[in-house]
Length: 177
Image: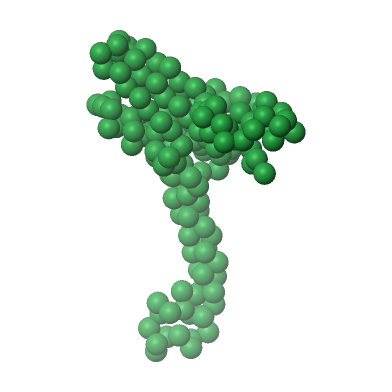
């Protein structure tokens, strides 16, 4: 605050004391301003703001959900906006899961939509599935699942080489060395 007082008055004892006491008040005020600003954005909001948004949107988090998973659910609910096009769906999945973590196949003739979510985004699958159910047209059949390792990717190894691994390790794309 002392920097806002004219140079002539900066050395006056009363103005120095006034600036010192006001400085504390302004620092407290700026702390509140930064806090309120941080609460406006999903990525930086606190636990209390997250709970408030969940009440507003009507979300019921699981007891095991982390704060980041709850924020992801809020973000997913907030970004759903009309119109829902195929391009919008591809963009939304890339935004929510990260580029390359989903595969979408649309069969126009049979009204079938297949969405494969990579195992890297496994914890977000249920939230994305809920978003898909709310956003795709009712005449499309939705087939959403996790993208496991396919048999064709394992064909380069012999059975004896794969024997030390469990079915889960092979299916879930764990490192094969």
